[in-house]
Structures are given as structure tokens and as C-alpha cells.
Length: 211
Image (cartoon, rainbow, N blue to C red; front, side):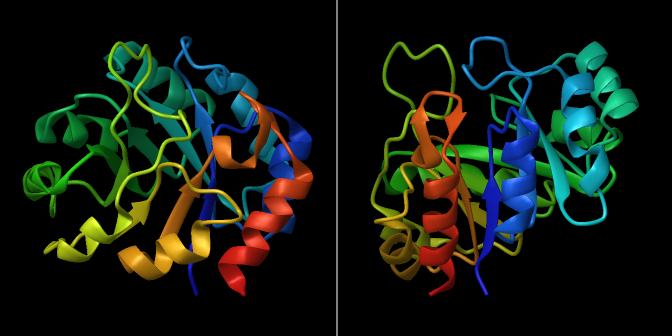
């Protein structure tokens, strides 16, 4: 069964809906330029009642040690997602603040971008392949852009990975088939506006993945 990560959640209803629709992971963005940003302590409140039902993911972008310590202390996430230019060594540092491990996001536009995965294979606990952001972007993800998902069939890595970038209810089944993904991540594809999740789109996405 293909597993689901609903990301960029900001309200209690977002989290409860994610659990109701069978998500394995719920993602919280700690990066002020993002319209999905929330503080770690707020995320802790949102997930407190469902910790036994879902895995919390803190999404960071080139976070400093102070932020990682705050995340570890207040949210105690299962996973910390590194969505910036973090090195393999920095991934090792971040792991100390997560209960399960580190997810390293890597941007993809063409086949040449897949080579970057080798440096994190066996270092990160999971990888996430997202669309490369547009030129001049102020954040690395959440733009709703896709890429040739079939490129991921070329991957030769041992680390589990998630497919991300431009996924939505009407294309996720084809994207999974093209890429061979066993897990998917979605944020903008289940929104009516940046940061505003739609229960109808969340339901439709989960149904499309599971059909």
C-alpha cells in the first residue's frame, strides 16, 4: 500500500482529517517565508492527541542548532525533514533531535539531479524527491510544480523515499505508477489557497492513492 504524508498542516482539523484519511505522516513547516509556517510549540499542540495514530514530521530549511533544539524539546517529532542545502554531516546532527530519523529532501528537474541522492543514501533515514523551485523562489518547496516522475525509476539507492512535487488527486495515481513510489507527500495539491487545506481534496487524494 502506498503511504501518505500530508504536509504543511496548520490547524487541528487538518491533523484530525489527515489521521481520518489514513496518513502515516503529518508535516509541520517551521520556516517563516512559507505560508504554511507554524512554530514548533503550536505544532506540538496540534499533534498531541494523535501521537499514537500518526508520525509527526518537522519540516526545516537550513535550520540552526537553536531551532533544532527547540523542535526536539517542544514537538519531539518522529522525523525532521531537511528541505534546504543541508550536508550529510548536518543530517547526522539533526537526527539527534528526532525520535525516528531524518528525511532529506532533494530537488529534481532532470535526470542529472538524481546523482545527489548518492551522498545521502544510508545517511538519511528517508529521502524525498521534490520539484526544483522556480528561479528566485524564497522557499524550496510547496509551489505545486511537477516534473517527469518516471525519472525516479532510475534510482539505485537503498534508502526508502517519498515522491513529492505537484501531486494532486487527479494525477497522483499516474505519478505513483510512473515513478514506482511507495510513499507520497502532498501540500499545495490539497489546498484551496496557500496554507488553506481542503478536507474534500484531502479525502480525494487519499482515495486516489488507495484505489
